[in-house]
Amino acid sequence: MTTYLLSVGSPDLIGSAARGAVISAFLVFIGLCLLWIFTLATHDDAPERLYVAGRSLPPVFNGVAMAGEQITVVILVSLPGSIALFGYDGVSIAVDSALALGVFLLLASRIRATRRYTLGELFSLRAEGPGTRIAGAAVTLCIAVPLLMVQLRAGGITAALLIGMPTEKAQVVCTVLMGCLITCFAGVADLRGTSFVQVAKVPVALATLTAVILLALRLFDWSPASLLSAAVDKSMAPGDYLSPGLWARIADLGPLGTLSDHIVVVLGTAMMPHLLLRVSAGRDASSARRSLSVAVGLTGLFYLLLITTGLAAAAVVGSGQIGAVDAKGQGAPILLASEVLPHHSTGRVVLITLVACVAFLAVLTAVASVTFAAAVSVTRDLIGRKGRTRIGIGEPAVLRLSVVTLCAVSLVLTTAVHRYPIEFLFAFSLSVAASCVFPALVYSLFWTGFDRRGLLWLVYGGLSLCVLLTLASPAVSGAEDALLPEQDFALFPLHAPGLVSVPGAFLLGWLGSARPWERTTHPRHTASAPTPDRGAPGARIGSDKTS
View 1 (cartoon, rainbow, N blue to C red):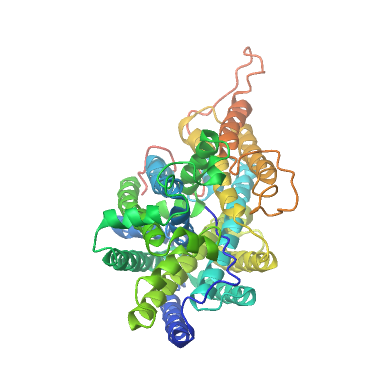
View 2: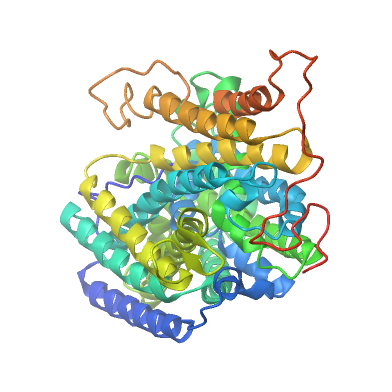
């Protein structure tokens, strides 16, 4: 998946006659959203109510909010385009993303039972000490900052395209304006406030996608078979559209490249820090499981609609035209929305406005959730615990300052690199989550011999592998869509390092903890159970008596 949408020179999808109405409606929607958001602002200084809503969110409500975490502007613009251009290969990525919550479901109840909600606290289950908390915060920031850059970039560019101003200058201005609005939201919200916005976003997004799909089906006499047949016929490779291997990025090394992408997407999407924070807001372990069940169902429906949207875009617009607007296909949903109704109809303006509103909600909630989770990690793991901080101010103030700082830094970085393709940052974030978070949690939750050395070897070793392999991959050099296409120092042939970094991290964690080179005549002491966290009374895997 990629989020680079350099739409300079793209066609004006709205037209000058309708642009004023679309922009006005979009601005009114933004204003109403901000007013509602500020009514959700909390003045509660209790850290647990601020971070995890006092662990009181109802299972269904929290499950819908969890599904909303999956509806990001990156997914909305990337997946339909990938499916429209590359058929089967794009569908496989959508299926991987849908399976991610199923993987998380296997660990959710155990994570909730620990009563810990940052990576630093979870890493300390069997390895107490400031070093493990610093490692957790470092991994969280390495995941969050690239994600924030990608979301802000995609949101700004999509907004510029939707309002009919696809120039590079307009894209940068839209990115900055949206970033400032989102910073205001993230600076006042807590987990409960973001949950309400996430819950509101889910039906709006699903209803908009459904409306676009139904309007596309109407053009084919309500026949899904005719729509699929048209998608194949209008693709750039009709004979291979429904077969694997059309996407050259995946087909470069055949099964190895495909397997590496599957590992990164499934495990990385499942191990995002904001999901860990979300599952901790449940009342108990059983509530967490019920919330995940609701989220899995809604997320499955969302990805089914995205797959259908991609096929409808190929059938109505055609892969050739989609690829001409953008080589990666991120304009597919917008092009589809602009083609399913007559160009001079009021309904077309309304539909494009709805798409713009959904895109704004998606980037708003995605950036706010990622920023909030990263700020909680900075506050809890780096600066202070239990309402005390090392800098003389309370945790809520530190949290707000961290949120604003993270948003500001991410926005500056995003605008500084606006001329460069940064799509690889999304895959990098997923790779770090898959390589550092998943192995560490599996070992911490299931292996009594896992210790501090093993955790640090795993985390920093996995992070180093992700950085080095990404820098040496075709995502950075040696390819037309690379960060530095003019240069070629790609020594690692895969775009995603998961095939090497995930097993490597597991191996490093085992070597650091087991230390097989040591003499067996000097047995080491191993913990029989995770050490309870003083900041989380009663934390013990397999029990939730204090919930």
